[in-house]
Every structure is written in C-alpha cells, then in structure tokens.
Image (cartoon, rainbow over all chains, first blue to last red; front, side):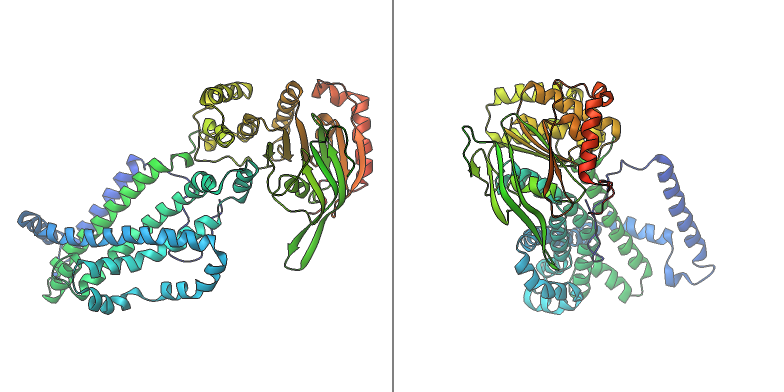
Length: 271
Length: 265
C-alpha cells in the first residue's frame, strides 16, 4: 500500500501495528517527566517569580481540590462530550463524503478547490458564526469541533480508497464478484487503517475545536476554566486546566492505539 | 471464424489492443490470433512489456479489444467471462483474511453447498501443504506460501480456464521451481486449459504443450513451438535432456539476439 502525504492532516496509516512498548521505555518516560517536574518545582520561586509559571506542587494541590469538590467533572465532562460528539459527527459525515469523492472523480474534480478552500480556512474564524447560529450551548462547540475534524476524514478516506490495490479489485472482477462484494471484502477493509489514522489525528483537533468554542463563549469546560483562570492571573489554574486537557488527549490516544492493535492484527508480522 | 467440431476454450481472432496514454494511442498488441483447446497448456513468452499480459487481461475481460474477436467457450468476451481463474504476478491476497478465508473467496462467489465447500477447502489446504497455516494471515507467510494460497484460491472454484500472468515471476529460483512442479502435478491430475504468460524460456518449455513466442511491442506471434516432451514431466531430469535444450535454444533464437529479460518495457 502506498502512503503518500498530501497535507499535514492526512496521516498515512502506520505500516505495521506495534505491540506495546517495553518496560525500559516506560521507566525512561517516567524519569523524564519526574526530572522536568523537579526542575520546574525548584526553578519557580528561585530563578524566577512563581507567579509566571506556578509550581507542580501548587498545580497538584489545585487538581486535588478540583477532584475533591467534584468541580472537575463538570469541566472535563463538558469538554470531552463536545470533542467526542464533534469527532463522531465528523467521522459519520466525513467518511461517506470521502467515499463519494473517491468514487465520482468528475464531481471530486469540480468541488476540489472549494473543499480545499474550506479546509484551508482557519476554522477558528467560524466561531462567531457558530455562536450566532447555535448560541453558547453545547451544540456550538460540537460544531466547532466537527468543523476541525470532518476534513481529516474526508481527505483520509478519499486518499485511502484511491490507494486500494487495483489488482485486488481486478482479481475480484475475474471471479465476477458483484460491486457490493468488492466493497465489503476489499474497499472497506482497506480504508479501516486510514479511518483509525483519522481518529488519531482527530482527537487532538476535536479538542482544539471544543476548547476554542469554550474560549469564545461558555460557562463550563476546560477551555473556559483556563480562560477564566488566566483572566484572574491564576497561573496555577491555567496549568491545572492544561494538564487535564493533556491527560484527556493521552487517554484517548491510548484507546485508539488499543483499538488499532485489535482491529489491525493482520498487519502484524508474527514470524 | 471457422467453427471446429468442438469450440476451443479460448479463441483470439485478429485481436489488436492499445492503451490510451497522454501522448496518444499506444498500440500494444497487433492482430494476434490464437486458440487454446480443452485441457491444453499454452505458454506465451516474449520480452518484458511486449503486451503478453495485456492479451491475458483482455481474455479475462479486464481490457477491451480495439479490434478483433476474443471468445471464451464460444462466447464473445465482454466483461469477465464465466468459469475463468486469474493469477497475477503479485499474490493479491486479501491481507485481512486468513489463509482459509482467502481460499474461500472464490467459493463465496461460486455458490457452492457448505458441505462441499468445507471439503474442498480442506483438500486444497492439504494439496498445497498449507493445513497448519489455515488460520494465519498473509503477513505471516513467506512469499512462496502466499503464492500457494493464491493458487489455492484460483483452484478452489475449479475454473475451466486458468489465466496466469507471470504467476511465479516474483519468486526466487528455487521457490519458482517448486511452484512450477506443484502446478504441473495439479494440472496433470485434472486437466484444464491454461494460458500462461512468462518471460522465462525454461519455465515455458518445462510447463507447456505449446509455446507462442511474441515480438517486442506491439506484440505479434513470431514463432510457435509444440513441446513434445512426455508427461508427467520431471523438471530436474528434463533440464538435462537434449530435447529440452533444443526447444529452449530454438525459442532463444526466435526471440533474436536481444536478451528478453533486459529489454526495456
């Protein structure tokens, strides 16, 4: 399978699925993060005023307090549901569009500049319109998130279908396979790796969409929490929010990784 | 067309084929006529890129002929005909299916009863020495094993006509010899019609009832050799026999001085 890259957000699927990393990698990862936190902890207050950067211990306390009061779930819940709904909606709508564009080359040629135009448009600029249309409800953030993600699915699925092995399809044709059979046995399984790659990129982008939506108008969510903390010159609050966002992205990535390992087991060479 | 008492399995009458390229029409095959009879093993040899594969694809209904008539079992080819099997140089296995599921693809499409189907798959796995790998995925197999699966998939639905496009061309010398032996063993047991493309002259003589030699593109038939070597053939003994050598050198001569493998496509 050829894996051409035509834009930043088209990520060719991994050539093969790795098994998890080994223990020593985890030890090094832990050492790295602990080392950085220690440096931060001692630099803040000694090398520069801790007002600018807060300190890991303060951030930890804040996170603890947020969890204890239960407030954390209100924000995490809001941001995760916005991002997740945006991501799923993007997959649900982007995938069929991608399939259609790959199938109808003529139509694809006609709409190509418009799709690329929309794709190139900074989606953040759409936020005022989404607020106007959908208010500051959940829905405007979902749409923001969707607008970030949908192109990833359109472009990856189109590219995925275009790289389906022609010989496989020809071989199916010599067996007089109906189109539906070819679709089921060849086309769809060959785009699964591209779909999973889209989810991997989509996670980050859907969070961007949700947070941008919250920055512009909201009364909850991690984006809103970070913005409010910043407004109150509360760097500890800002970092606590960022930490939670990062955790969400990492957990979501791990989930996709586990799904990939299960679904794409056939890519693993076990010899 | 002259009708013979029994129609040949494959018939090409004055067939020309061309490709459309950005620089215009590229003639690939020039007025070729040939026939493959029931249970006959015909091999096409010629320089790489001369258009042999295009002929095969046209017989399979994957490319349309520019002029002339192609018929399989007396029916004019217009899209893939019934009861043909095709094998590419690449194994074209579906990597997400197991060995068994790949072999079953042909049976899925042939509408065969489940009992018969299970038996046939088991027989084939045995015949091709793949039984212990029935649940492996292609990524776990060697190139030679993948080609055996590919052969199994074609044999499974028992096509009356087999079209093979350099099926062993990507394999190393030894695996290629083994695959050739397997193919002969199977074909000598249940004779079907085979149209086989290769640029390996020794392979051609070892397998064929008849070898058709093609010119460089646009392909024309420039020589025809009936290979009167006894069957079942023992490939190792064959290579040492003077008649085998006589056939191969005759074909080398027909191809001219050019090294058939190094001619640019």
